[in-house]
Image 1: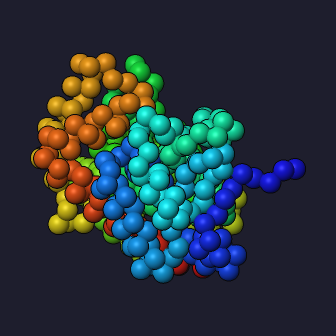
Image 2 (image 1 turned 180 degrees about the vertical axis):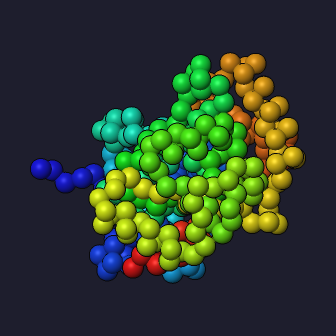
Image 3 (image 1 turned 30 degrees about the horizontal axis):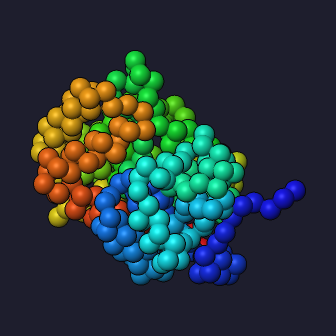
Length: 304
C-alpha cells in the first residue's frame, strides 16, 4: 500500500511525533472568506493564538498533489495570495480529485476533518460550520459538514453554524445524525456573530477538560463521529440578533434575485454582509475565530 499524500510542516511533524497537542485549521477561510492581505494577517494571528495556548497549529490545504498538514509562513503566504477562482473549495466529494490533479485546494470543515483524522489530529478550530441552507426543503442544499461530523472522530470548535443558514433545521439534522452539540459556558446555542440564537443547546459543558473527557469516552464506547463545540463569540465583538438578522435577510434576498446557488452562496452572502455592516461583520468574524482557537488549544492540551 502506498503512503498517504501527506506533507507535514516541521513543527507539526515534531509535535505529532512527540505526542504534543496539535490543533487543525481550515484554509477556505483564507482563500474564500477574507480578502488579501487581511486573510494572511488573520491566519497568522490564529496560529499565534494556538501557540500561546500551548498547542501547535496545523493549517491544512492541498498544494502540488499533497495534503499539507501545517503550512510554513512561505506556503501560508502563497495560499493567501491565491485568487478564489484558482483554489478549489474542497469537501469530501472533491478532495481526492484535487490531490490527484495537482491543483490548489482550500479545505472546508468537512475536508479539514478528514485530513486531520488522517494525520492523527483530534481537535479542529474554525469560524462556523456549514449546515442546512434556507429553502433546503426545495433545493436540498445541505452542507457535507453535518455528515462529516457524524462519521469523523474530530472535536470541532466553532461559533455555532453560520447565521445565514436555517439554524433550527441544522440542529435537527445534527441531532438525527447523533452528533453531540455542546454549548460552551451557556445554555443557549450561539449563532456565529450573535451569542444567542434563541435556541436552547442540547448539551452544555463549562471546561475544556469536560469536553476532552467526552471525546475520550465516545472513542471508548465505540461511538463514531466527532463532536461540535458551539463557542459563543466574545461579548465585546458580538453583533446582536436584532441587528444582524435584517442584514442577513437583505443579503439572502439579493442572492436569490441574482440566481446565486450552491458553493457560491456562502462567499456571496459573507461578502455582502461585510459591505452592509461596513466591515463590522469581518471584525466580529476574526474575533470569533481567535476565540475558537483559544478554546481548541485548551481542549487539545486537556486531551494529552
